Image 1 (cartoon, one colour):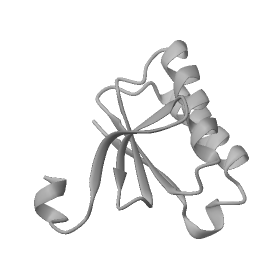
Image 2 (cartoon, rainbow, N blue to C red):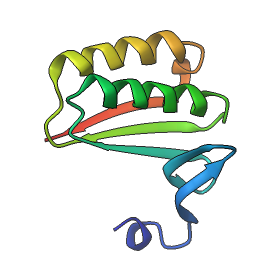
Image 3 (cartoon, rainbow, N blue to C red):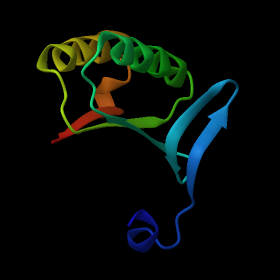
Length: 100
């Protein structure tokens, strides 16, 4: 879908930097992290660790939550994003999208 819509834009799956990998990197400027079924504390903690790693990359970040997301974890995620990425949020550098 993305390749069809963004015909002349480079899209890389599992883009890596150091020990971290983002699910999709679009045009070396937009990172997309996909999570299916964020409904356990261990998955939430893993996601937070990934986000902290991505913070230093200096790119725009979109977090896409698909499937069943536990509402309490979503609230906590939003708090962490606001706290950790506060300086970046002035230009909407981090967005959370929830699709059920």
